[in-house]
Length: 263
Image 1 (tube, rainbow, N blue to C red):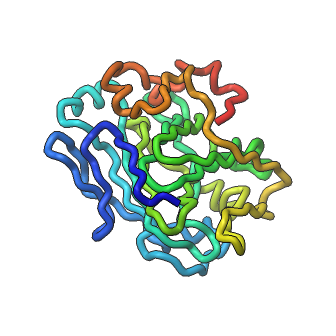
Image 2 (image 1 turned 60 degrees about the horizontal axis):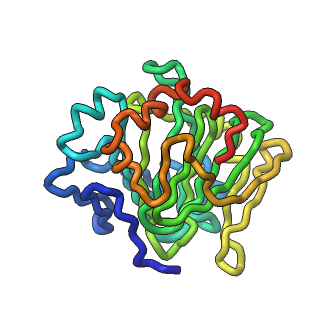
């Protein structure tokens, strides 16, 4: 695996490892990072007692170019960045626990999210429902420069597929973001657990707390109808047209595209 690939996101933010977090350039604003520790996510892992890095990932919500700060607030858009630790969580890869976006007071919808991978290798896992029947389940394999869209109301989790290389990504979110974990935790995690097999490749095991489902593994779809241009950073797309991602805080603008959505 190529450990040197880093996709330029179009703004001067770089991940750092010691301590885990981000370096912001002079023209970029951003908060102190928040940490998600292994103890925070154990309930949603296949083996809650597993060993792994104490700090699983660092997250900075609301970053951007200083000249866009007021514009981002006006458009109700928020750009977040996340970097993961290298390593494993027992047999599982380093990952988030899985959640649904809360219903936003701004739109009355659970909101979508637009991921852009900067470094490492990602799997964006998503399932339609957090109920006993999880509906359609997808594992979308993404590399630096790839974009993946998670639709409104879907459960999703971000997985680092390469234990040797930290995963870093950026994402467009609703400024009124929030996470709902209850239903996922009731089922002791997502419907399919990623695990490393004997060849150190990702395999998938069904979570017995859900009914039977099929997992579809794929590469990211062509998101042209959502304004995505392959190879163009999603922050740069916003710079070109500040209205291009208004469907993130207002998902109803793309209502017809969310029906039978394929990521």
